[in-house]
Every structure is written in C-alpha cells, then in structure tokens.
Length: 195
Image 1 (tube, rainbow, N blue to C red):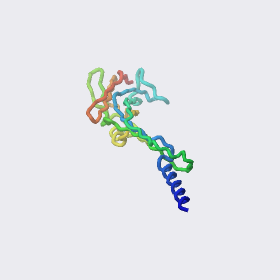
Image 2 (image 1 turned 45 degrees about the vertical axis):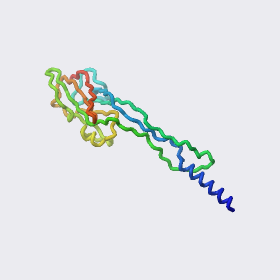
Image 3 (image 1 turned 60 degrees about the horizontal axis):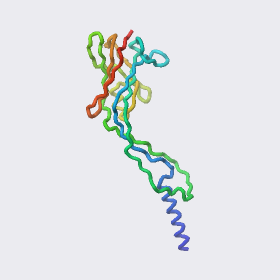
Image 4 (image 1 turned 180 degrees about the vertical axis):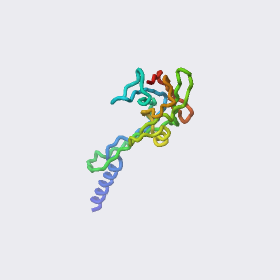
C-alpha cells in the first residue's frame, strides 16, 4: 500500500513540475536596450488618395511630414529553463499567454520641436504647434498631447500641418528630437515651395 501511494505521489509531483515549468511551450521573453541614433524626415503632399513625397510645389493645407527615429537594439537578457519535464508523457490543456519581449529605452525621447526657415529672409520660427497627429482612435491631437499619452513611442509617426498662416511660401522645415540626456537628433527637409 505504501509503495502504491509513494508511486502515485511521485507521479503527481513530476506532473506538477512539468506544468509549472512552461506548460505553454513559450519562448521566454527577451529584453532589449533601444538606443536612438538618428532621424529620417520626409515631406508629403496629402491632397490625393495616396500621399506622395513632395517633389515640386504643394498646397499648405495638404502638407505633412513623416518622422522616423532610427535606433539600435541590443539584446541584454534571455533566460530559458534547462529542465523540460514535458516529455514525461503528461498532457494537459492550458490557456496560454506567452510573455512579450521587453524594450528598455537607454535615453528616452523627451520632446520634439519643428522649426521653419523662410528661405527668402532666413527668419527661423518655431512651428511645432502648427502640426498635429492622430491617436489610436483616429482622433486628431496636438504633438504635446501625443507625447504625454504615448510614453512607449519609439519608431515614427505622421504629422499634418493644420495651421499655415505663418508658414513662408518657400520653406525649409527642421525637426529636432530631444532625448532625456539633452542629446538632439536633427534633420531637415529640402526647400519646400508652397502654392
């Protein structure tokens, strides 16, 4: 009787170990460090059914910018259990949710500035508030609201120029991404001619 009880307990012990190790057969989540190192900027004519990169003149009310922040990813952690008890013949059904990869921003983005240079007079103005973007619900929001509500932003977004009364007819736009450390990533467009 004792041998049967001990055998049964050992059997359930191995099943417990098998189910507690990784019953879903998930790959463990990886951890990466993200380091921002550059900026790409494109100017768009948004007047048609599809956005087209600005190559000639564009209307002020159909002008937009795409800001893409370039970064390096370095994997810093990967943990995997060496024990695999799932081969002992225990089969079970589980509702699984595998852990996602984790990304750590080494030097997070603090803010963005957009300036325009009038190529005729060389006057430079801050026009950040002239642009807006869209949230996850498709609602138009200001850039400052976007940064307040999206702390995990890391890749890029589309900006539409919504105020254009103070925009010169021939302009060069400069976008500056400011990181928490004070490092600045800067890029500018070619000369834009507005109709």
